[in-house]
Length: 480
Image 1 (cartoon, rainbow, N blue to C red):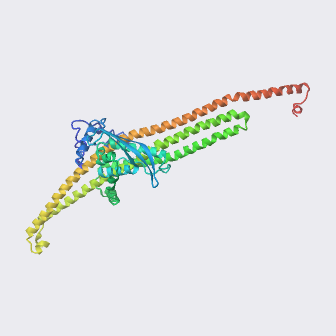
Image 2 (cartoon, rainbow, N blue to C red):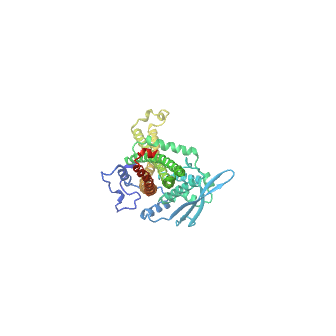
Image 3 (tube, rainbow, N blue to C red):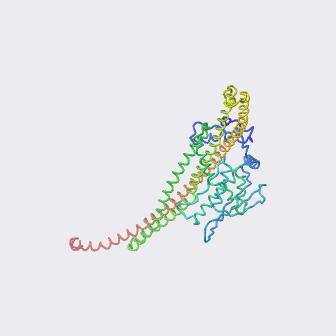
């Protein structure tokens, strides 16, 4: 089987004679995720024999020195286009490159969201053994798709999508990517796309492959289980974050209406004007940090969490395609074995009672014809098995390399995402804390005037009390 050949070499056979640090065994005391990553980092036996020469040379160049980058893509400057029939938003895609396959060093084109969808579809079809990054969702439940905030969020996500594509050592050399970056119009290229029927057929095949697969390597089973668990966890994070965001947004709105309540109260309480005014100012100061925190969460944290939910789906899809490739290989091997067994049976069989012999043919000629036909079929099947074996090994190597790259990006992105969330929360509550500490100082300073007022009232009542004592009048009579 194809998986039995793993462990005989590095992924691209370009590091012979060196020790890859990613292949160092992981301690048994590590947690589950580290064990999974260690399995994913296991070496593969063959290189991508079907990759184009340009893509292969580019990948080797990037593998030798990851700091060398010759393709830079920026998505910015979104613009809203309003027409009588349709309204849409376009984004500028600016490219700088030193690759010889490009005619110019710089390109600047404008693309709609559906153009990015076309690009991703083509990359998924032509680079089926690689993980293609996800695009942001087409619609948002919380925002208008033509609003500036939504366009800004989508622009950031599209920029990240193009960044990930440009950094991939193989996908970045795809011909459709070059067309997307350089062509002034994509209308003619988009019309040549695959039909919906073929895409549905491909989806059905990849869905059923996992059921029919018999000898999946344990490492890919671990990958599948891990990515399923990861997707579920990220979905839970997104769902709970959405609820918390709504509660915090409601809290900010309530604080905005809470402050004026104290100021209105202060108008009817002359002795508490400073105190109530200080409380109103404090609540106003707390409302703004809550508003800033919710906006920051909505613009940065939630899109990042949603991206990795979609990324998990992309990884699952690529794993299913790998399973389908292995399933084709297994079916071809089974068919080859069946034909070989049939050929051996023909060699020892008696053809005197075969249909050809009954019709008057020589039994030996009948046997020879059957053997020749089976030899031809076996030769074709053997070539198909060899091709599918190489294809399976390529899919395994690509899957491992892309999964390792995905894990590195995930660790980096998760660190940035949760660090940003923590800083956002700390800044909000720090500003609220400062506002409340100011109120405490106001309340402390406001205590002295009240004490002076009480003392003055007591002093005013002292002469009356002394007069009552001198006249021997009861204090109750004096009060009356």
